[in-house]
Amino acid sequence: MNADLVYQLALTLVPQIGDVHARILLQHFGDARSIFSARLHQLEKLEGIGLVRATAIKQFADFHLAEAEAAYVEKFRIRVLFLDDPAYPRRLLNCYDAPTLLFYKGTADLNAKRMLAIVGTRSQTEYGKTFTETLVSDLASEGVTIVSGLAFGIDATAHKAAVKNNLPTVGVVGHGLARIYPAAHAGLARDMVEAGGGVLSEFFSGTMADKHHFPLRNRVVAGLCDATVVVETAVKGGSMITAKMAGEYNRDVFAVPGRTTDKNSAGCLHLVRQNKAMVLTSAADLIDIMGWREASVGARKQRALFVDLTKEETAVLDILREKELVPIDELNLRSGLSSSTVAAALLNLELNGIVTALPGKLYKLT
Image 1: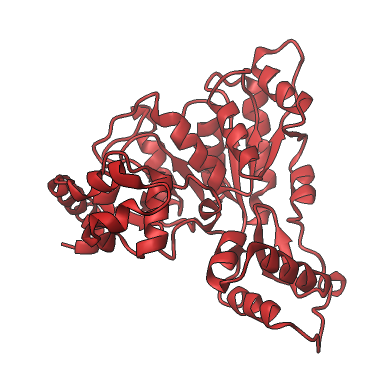
Image 2: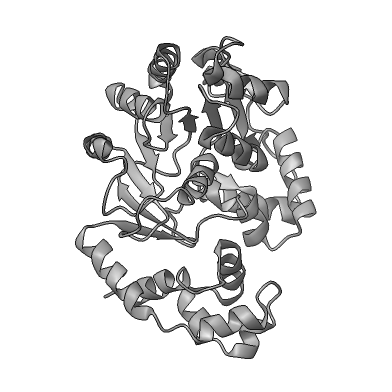
């Protein structure tokens, strides 16, 4: 059995240790095993941890639960993505409350170039259903990965449309992967995985669906993506939570307009009225606003040649050369520079046409 995996799973089981605390511990100690090996005084002196949480770590005795889960995921070939896994969704790393680990069944790239959440009411109208199907169909040539919550209504329509149009689609669920909820979508989940998509969860395999889990699920949907589209929703509901979290994560939010007398459009109109979402009427709008329309080769800005770079700019550039997309948090962490110095370096690199800034505080070489 993979001992590192057991320690990673165990870390999520420690009372009083949430995702934010786990990240603090990992940034200091480097890996889960070292956290459990640390002395009490080493743990409690960390800002945000203290004596109560340090004691909870030292007194943790439920490693058998972590071992059982490790055996389950290995048996059913469920991939566990820990915070330091290269395949962990980099966009989520920009979120302060990113899950410590994720359970993943599928092959879709969770760090794909373009990730879009499409969410909405379970009680979709024919208008909402048709709009969702058309939107996904019109995005088919843009290489977009569609993310939603595998619920009835708009979620299921978005997933089905993605499968139909050969786009990878990922369903984020509020329960463990030993089952699918709602049960009626078990076949859809299989179709998604077989078509190159996936199903994602932050919950242990045996965890049942619970109303308290769905807001957590919604934050993952928002954090995974460059933008969130709300098709239909009442003023209160899971889609509004997803939109709120997307806004807090500095992601773009779009709302589909509807009739002012339609309760299923009330939430969308509220988002627009509160300046929390942009009106979306077509895929073309989305593509233009997100900058997803590929420019012609001749129109692309040529990368500046023979530019004199500072050592700080060179350090940032070296990191960007390693990956297609790099989040700002990773640049700050790996460069060892202050956030203001990294921001200044990125600005100069952008002005010289060397670096391009993308939604979600992601950067890439031009």
